[in-house]
Length: 396
Image (cartoon, rainbow, N blue to C red):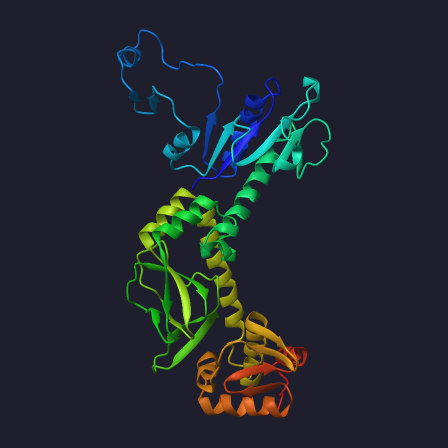
């Protein structure tokens, strides 16, 4: 259902003039807008003597006119306004000029110079646009500030969709600036699938035509060393684009595997790229996501220098996992998913025995506790101080 907002006012207030200013501002915000105008009198949009006019006068119930740049369908019979709404497609918003008794959201215009009272109570409108203060207005804007009204409408639509839609993409942080129509289009073209722990979503050097966005659960991004050992690069939680390639036809350079039961939004690359072409904000969001991953990778590389001790590396890993996936508990911050010694070894790129020894030292030092693969950071500040100590100084 396309959202509908009625712009209402008494005749002479300037509804059409205001809409002329509002529509370009809405378009700047990426919204495609339809307008339906109320006319209290008989109207004629065809021209006498034209072929279409003659066909209508001959008795056609519906007359259609199509050119290379536009088309029109003239219903030569009474129609309810709701029927007109139902025929409108491929827009993000329907504005009406008039229809103050309609059962949809309203923005009321009021101009003091008309000398008239309000056409309806201000409390019945989502906003009032006036040149004088109006008692009871939920939101009020100046008649000359169409840009602010457009921003208000965009935020109103997002709240409306988020509140009523089952579309989980509205809660994905890197997609927050997209138009509702883009999010609805992505949702329609894709699906949510549930994957069990240990499902490989992407494999290095194997082509994939699917885009994956983590909605719940967690996945690990890793690669294999020449000796076949797994080296974990990232652990990603909800709201992350898991692919390293979207636009190019290259195979992934890394593996992606769920490390716990996960719900993931899946969509074909073809459909995803189609929406990137329609909405540049989606392209920007993807670029920002991939740049953030590169930034994370830069920090990872700083911590893989051969001169850094494994103790500091593990301290850094645990502190960052607690920051990204931590839950406050009475005794500290618990990393909210299971972490085995083997998995920690894969993250560090070192033997399991070494990782086990360091974990025992951390427990003896009162830095962490481990209970059934759940690690709790007892003192995050001490752990942070540990990994920030100069690499020239031996810790243990």
